[in-house]
Length: 211
Image (cartoon, rainbow, N blue to C red; front, side, top):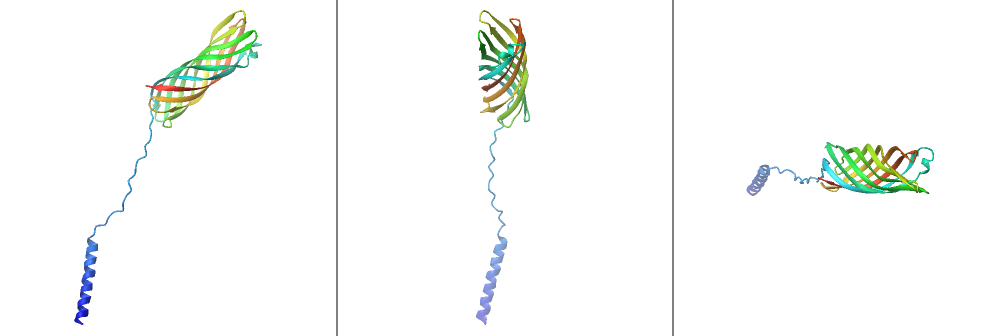
């Protein structure tokens, strides 16, 4: 009996010691995996810029009877632009001016009609989605028309309006690329006694350098 009692007492002591030891252990929190922040690009469109562009234009004359026979005036265009943006939260407002050399012309022998140059001064309003900015644009336009009848030629400066839309994508803080569509209506002027204006479309791509 003594041996049995001793064994029981020893077992009870061991169990009691284990319980005390477990109670003394601190409660360890569950491990937490570190969260790595996702890098985001916060592009700021505010500032001045200048750049170059090139594209294609096509349209037709309107005005006095017979003028609308020139219904396929087209050709390459290219030039330069300068402008400035101010960003308010996700909205971007700006102004841009450009000047283009134009190869748009049509010949109905012996008469050749051409637009030698044109330019615009426009407001722009866009929505900035980081480095991606779709925008609408509009303002006034001007251009230099020329009519050559095979014997003599006359030139005039036309004034009108333009409107369109585009998208600009920034590669970094100093360079962006854009694609743009414009519809332009240059008002009527008189050539050899006939009044003629020009409506045309341009599609162009360009690069801007920001500073």
